[in-house]
Image (cartoon, rainbow, N blue to C red; front, side, top):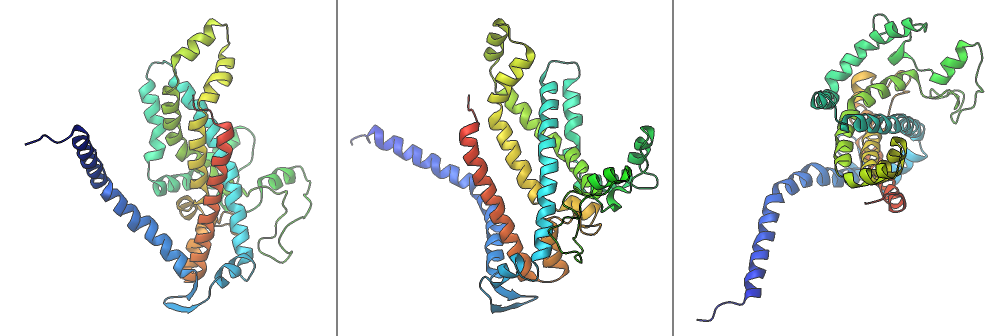
Length: 338
């Protein structure tokens, strides 16, 4: 009986390995399909109908028109503005702090493992539990934040209860005022000078967010630093390069793929921010911390307008998708892979 060809045996082995691989990832695929893709398709479907508690008449793109330029436009654009401001505050600061701390923790030092664990602890702490603690720390009457401000001669702040912008507060402390320029009409509840800056309440939520997420980003940066070969550093030091030159000319360029990943994940997370907003401010005061994620929750669940909430969710998904594609296009020119 002739023996099977070696090529046929190898093909059967590869086929069996591929089949085993698909079987192993099948549970993850099923979970992603059920909890990610199916809800996404359902949101698109619901956004095309009149949908309060039960499905109504087909509306096509009318729900999107209502959200973008109709009766819900003011709330939508205000929440989007808060979301973008929140992202611009948190993401750059998170990246800078986590990169610096990761670089320090990557050096040889006594107790390095303990320090790494301590910085990672906030990330594995419950978001809601930690937010409750920060509510206590920012309490206007007895919070630790106001106590610390008192040591440097700054008066107590209302923190999460303060709707005025931080620039407006600083300028007002000197008796000055800002130009009253706002994209919203004078009678609108969202009317505020564009020069006022983010509300102190939003700054307070941002402080919590930065504290909570830098631990995860430190771990990612540590992994990126570990992938840089020591040969680059040894050659640079032999050529007389300073530590500053090594960091700026070697570490930062070779760490750009990691930085790109951290920036992408952090930005997507901030655009979808909800848990910390719900636990700390409920979107207040005067809706100055109501992000688009919280607005979707408010419209969908609290107001019962499932169709409009679904339309907002689809728009937010499209924004995140466009942003991610844009970041990948930028990364093609600025990210260095070794």
